[in-house]
Image (cartoon, rainbow, N blue to C red):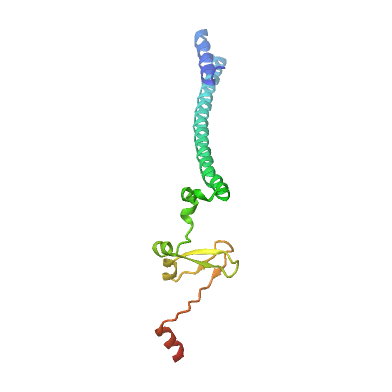
Amino acid sequence: MDSLSSKAAYLKGLYDGMELDGDKAENKLIKKIIETISDIAEAVDDVCDAHDGLEEFVNDIDEDLHSIEEIIYDEDDSEEDDDEDEDDNPIDLLDYDDEDEDDDMGFFEIQCPNCNEDVMVDFETLDDSMPIICPNCHQEIELEFDCDCDDCSSDDKDS
């Protein structure tokens, strides 16, 4: 099937080949209609080209997302079946079970008193005196620190 642009060019060629008198009103009208059809055909071709580019881009994103889903979901399923692949799972990078890693990373784990879910908190959040909001239940977590040092216990005795 011919493109709209080629069909419009064919109509323009027919008009030019007829050598019609350009001073007559009906011939001026036909010429303007053919020019308008040419402009519309060009605009539609541009839209189709842009659509094709966007379609290719969306397909690339879909393929990338599918790859990520395979990594996340397939390895989670295989982890239940076979625990030997733990080092290969990128999700394990977020798992801070080792206390030494917590200190090195600047994070520690607390349990939310509202929903009882474990929450990772960084030390900077405590230093900034910012409230800690549970990502699961969205409630503020109030921390109480018990200290066994001599300074704190002498302060308690003086009070």
